[in-house]
Length: 168
Image 1: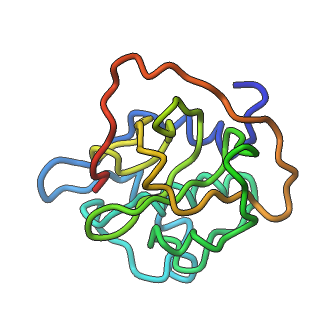
Image 2: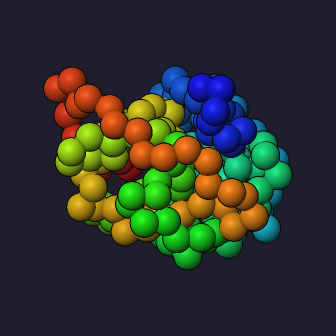
């Protein structure tokens, strides 16, 4: 959308990107990791079977010159990144961090309904999608420290779309 921050426009442009089946790897996802490099990711990233939600977020932010969280590949590294936002100050492009069985998940806020955030993220069902994730699982709402918050919360109808239980 026209008022979306550049990093969210980059994320929307990646909707539908999927992991490769089996032992193969999607060259696009590996390319995001390669451009970010080991210093940003905190590890050598060489397989799309390794959780890549943090790679996706860092790569989209890098499109707008925004530095990633330390050890960006780990979703929980994003908990203290940037500036905290209260739920009533959320705007499209905010970085949301969630707890999940076995780890965490990170993605971009695009809207919400009464019980869930609508999150544009990578590695959601092995693809870049928009998923509904229960608000109660959200442990951090963040915004780039050097950018003004633009926009406000966006209400989206759930339309019977299920709530994601585990994004791995």
